[in-house]
Length: 203
Image 1 (spheres, rainbow, N blue to C red):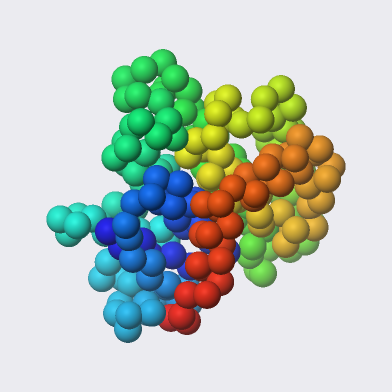
Image 2: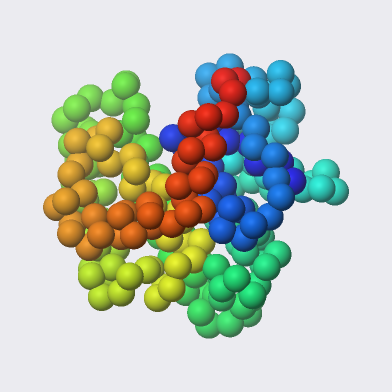
């Protein structure tokens, strides 16, 4: 498999999961501006949407969209427990959680990256995002991980919460989230993924 990633992007979450599962893969860096890869190729030929993550399977199929990639990978090794069994009620809860992270936290961060949006408007988006952080903070004040034990949703949440300092949002305002970030950040797979992305050749 090949995982196409960009530094400080949501592609870190499938990267973490690949390492948690111990699956073999090639890590290929993408320049988000030029859409060129570290192999010298055109990323748009891999994923016409133009954004990471993209996972190229050994049979040539290309899978995009983080939540889909995360669940596909977890199902390759169901014994890992990174996702509940397909068809179970617990799997429905995972869908719910991934959708919340995608639509309310990940997408909630998107306007805050834009240099074209006025600060006053960003303030409104920041307020909404903070309310969503209240929600996950409440969950993580009751348990260590979103669904009880570490899984793909936690890898995704960890990844998007890494962006908060860019928006002048202090995670210490949510002690449960701060503890979660420390807990997940201490995992060997997470440390390895972060180190590998930092060391990857430029695209």
